[in-house]
Amino acid sequence: MMQGQDDGMMTPHEERATDWLARGGLRPTRQRLALARLLVGDGQDRHVTAESLFALTGGVGEKVSLATVYNTLRAFCEAGLVNEVVVDGARSYFDTRVENHPHFYWEDTHALTDAPAEEVTISALPAAPVGTQIARVDVVIRLRRA
Image 1 (cartoon, helix red, strand yellow):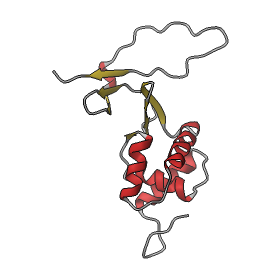
Image 2 (cartoon, helix red, strand yellow; image 1 turned 90 degrees about the vertical axis):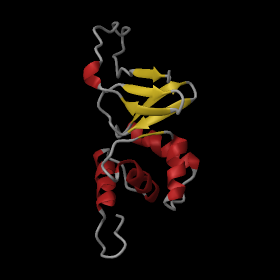
Image 3 (cartoon, one colour; image 1 turned 135 degrees about the vertical axis):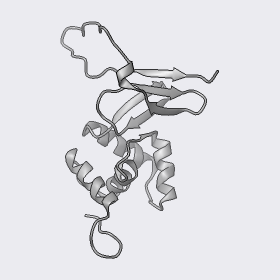
Image 4 (tube, helix red, strand yellow; image 1 turned 90 degrees about the horizontal axis):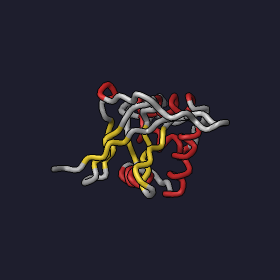
């Protein structure tokens, strides 16, 4: 486990990251812990792309390759720790808030933010094809400044 710098105790950021990985059943490797600290260490929800998370690692002095960031985000998805939100064929965001909720996609800044779930009503969904079940419904509301 990662230790705090001075007293051998974990910092709150390290503790949150370690607990988060444990909830997903993931072994706390150095890279996973580094990325988990950036994603959930401060207790705030995040919407990141692999590239934006990679850029954050450099800002805190972590040595993690972009390929490792992609692979780790996939592992976090498979463990149920993040959801992938695809806004177009070439851009995916990873959301640390995993319960179902809608998003705003800001076309001018390419930012993804939470939208107020209580203001969205879906009255019906089509039946899933035979042999399948609906895993999740993603609602992405695209915004363009007027």
